[in-house]
Image 1: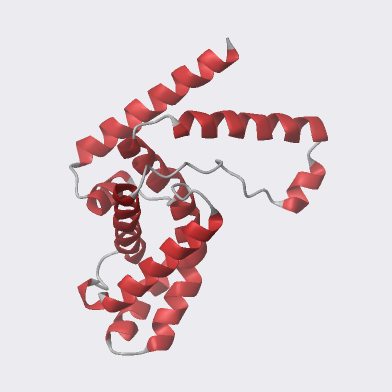
Image 2 (image 1 turned 120 degrees about the vertical axis):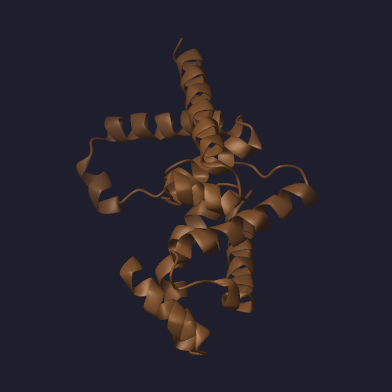
Length: 182
């Protein structure tokens, strides 16, 4: 999937809209999961994803086929999310891990599914309480699947800042969950 990105980017830069359409097909679900973590509802997330793709198309000349495509796209979406935060109160953090494979869910006992749902809800509450810069790195890491260096590039911060934010976010979540269980 991702190995096709450089050739698709080259084709899109050469003016082939179908290559860009293919990039949209490949990356929209992943981008939506990332943006949904910061949008108050699915409609807002869809709007932000559409705006991210529009800006990606408008600024496609800034994209290099020699660099990974998704981190570039994620930086556009992250900037849009930041703009949304500035325009109004910080966006709510959506439920963590709400996409459950229905076939696998049927095989898991009901009690185990309920416990997992409860754990995800507690985790989502904990993430809601994190500082915005920690929520961003959590979303880019776990929803976007980006590595530390990619997160640093997306956010325009040093690599050690990403490591620090992730470490502090995990520690805060751990404390929150321990207090919840006490």
